[in-house]
Length: 536
Image 1 (cartoon, rainbow, N blue to C red):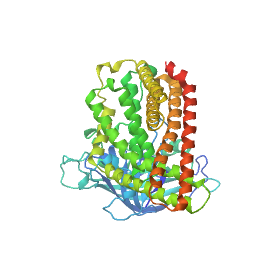
Image 2: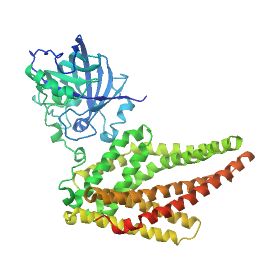
Image 3: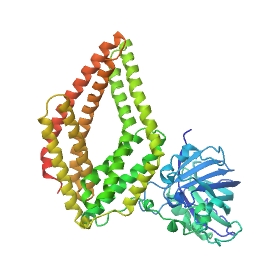
Image 4: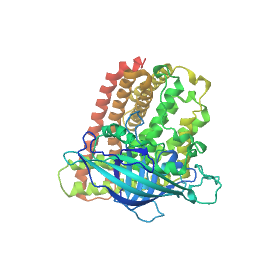
């Protein structure tokens, strides 16, 4: 069952036990405050022994009581852009189910971070929550102010791996760690984020101060956990300091870090078989491979070679189901254009059977790979690279000059591939040569994308030119693969009525290949001068 999703936008306040909730119907846009209602909530929070989820600002809990009982997973904001307003957190929900079994629909979103480590109950919270709903003049439910009185107990799994408890209480105490506090939460429902700024002075006058903790779980476990168990992979994408004057390794590392984030972000979608997730993850692996190849001299050889090899392995695993999916879609589009009848439907059945079997087999291998120690080691290595790039001494060279040289080298490589294709013999050799052009155009595109941070619009134009040729020759290659499959299927026993449909589809592929090569020659001619001038 797919998890329900929503966006949580709230602001927390610390408040004393004797504070009174102030009148809120005087806030701009708030016409009235609904009747308060009280609920008793109990939530058990889950994490690993070294706070893997907490360090990544991820919260996983099972809560009973109230109107939203069930499993809840809260993910950090996707954008880290500075703002005076609270950033929204993506929240996913699943039914209560068993108290000791995290639903797969939620677990899929954190497996890339857990990397095989089990989750355990770490904290139990009991909350008496009194909620004050805020309404606008038109009756719209703008927000809720929750007055929470919390009692927290750190459970056995809440002690970290060295047997200590990082909270404020004595870590060696035999008694369970119990804490009590009170806090207010102002959470938007259908209201505007400007409500936070308007509410701040009113709540402050009542004795509230901005909370010193990001979540109830963080307050219960106490400070210091993340620092004592920090991992290189929790930093996220670094900022590019000094702009166009940034050193070469900084430019490349920032580009690679963005692709690592993309890979991690798409992991759950691949596990849940969401549309385009495989394509997006595969694109991230390809960009990293292209950048590591183009800038390999900036880094020590061994770690870069290992990363490239492992990314190639992952890309190959991702390619199986993706290529089968694209092939089936390509051929079914052609079949849709044929007159309806027994022949086209027989061909469709054969295509679906062949491509479907390849997709299913590839999907099984992919799902197995995503659960493997090899994949988890790759993620560790990528995040280690991001946190501590294995740079050589020459990596302090000006980034703009180094990336320009890399783009020029990739463009030269593409020109050689163009020349080889132009002189290749018609047939399989020519098709292989054009496929190499496509791969080199893709590499140029990725290297030019890495240069955009310091070379601006010109690098963007080069990337666009590379993408155009890649796309045209990608369509050409799809037609080649489709033709080969059709010829294979045609050689197998099939209904007589299907022969004409096969012939029509083969003719269509020939036409697509001819049109694609014509478009390619035009695109190559249009970009020839641009690619010779480089990006500086």
